[in-house]
Structure formats: structure tokens, C-alpha cells
Image (cartoon, rainbow, N blue to C red; front, side):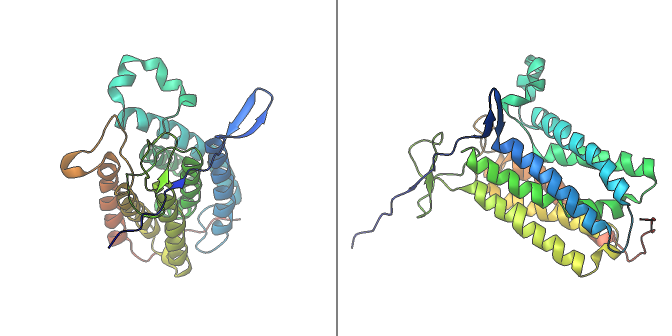
Length: 273
């Protein structure tokens, strides 16, 4: 009995530059950031109109700048500290060369958390209630970012024999999991649906629960995605075949569970629209 070997899928020839106007080139990854920020901003405004009202339209408009800085600065510094500290210590000028790539979600998340803490203190907005609004929009940017990773032909998966395995231009001759799409589905679509269901079920009435659900949900989704994703070549596998992404996700899972367990029903303070 002979086995039928299905041919691997070839990665589509996609130009990493989405739009080019003269010397100005806009890449898919930049568009994903822009679209994620704009769509998230609009969705957060829509969420804020529903009870319990904890932030005004002006608050959310103003926080957009804070969040953008948190994502960019935190994402870059997170990559520098978590993934290549020795390289950047030896060449500190490269820290600012963001056009060469290198962003970490865990660092970006920490940057946004710090921005939210400072912003809510300044505006006297309950932090956990504001966080419950904020996390509902994050999966939008996550999903778009993973799709951009796929379009760029980067961060591909491990070698596989599944029929949908894909040969990436920079991934060698063997078919690999299109793990960017797996992560887009897990971290983007499914996490968005989970938070949306919890929102509809009224869990915003328990400040901190949605924030915890996001942290734990993302940590689990990322850990599952890492089972199919090829680790960065400069890191490889860590203890017992784990990856850096899984280790960085573990604290998120623990903190998320803690937040959900401690969340109690409470009326969030209303603010005039």
C-alpha cells in the first residue's frame, strides 16, 4: 500500500510593500498597526457608550496617543530586553533602528498597561474598569498583525507534513505550518469573540474580570500557537522544548486568573458623556 503525498503549497508572491508613492513605502506591517489602532479606537468608543460608563469620548480620544506610544515604545524595548539584550548592549544605536524590525507583543502590552495606569490616575478613572474597555479592542490589532506577518512571509511555523503545509521563501525547502494564520485565528478572532461574549453577558459589571480573561486567554492562545511556530533562530528551544513566547505568556495566564478570581460585582462610577 503506497501513501499519497500531497504537494506543499507555495507561499504566494506578495510584495511586503503595500503602497509605494515615490520614495515613500508603506509596508503591510505598518498598515496593520495603523488599521488596528484606528479600528480599536472606534470600537472602544462604541463600548464606552454602554453601561457601566467609566470613560467619555474625550477620554478615549486622548488615550489614543498614550496607547500608541505604549505599543511602539513598549514593543521595541520588550524585543530588546526579552530577545536580544546582549546584541543591543554592544550596539545601543540599533535600538532606535525600528525600520530593521523587532517588536515584541509582551513588551507592547506592558507599555500599554503602564500608559493606562498613568492615564487613569491623571483622569481619576477606575483602572480595572477602564482596562475592561481597553482589552476588548486589543484582539483586533493582534489579528491584523499576525496576518501582516503572513503577508511578509516571516515568523513561519515548524516543518510539517500536513496537506496545507507551505513553503516560505525564507524558510528553506521544507513545507511549514502557516502558524501566523493559526495565531491570527487564536489571538485575534477567537479571543475577540470570547471577550465580546463576556461583554454581552454583563461581565463588565465585575471590574477586572474582562482584563483577566484577556490576559489568561492571550497567554493560552499564544502558548498553543507556539507549538506550531518555529522559534527564533537566535533563541531556539528552551527548557523541555518550550519557547520564549510560552515563558513570557505564563505570567499573563497567572495574573489573568488572579484578576478573574478577585473580580466582584460592583457598579462602576459613571462619567458624563
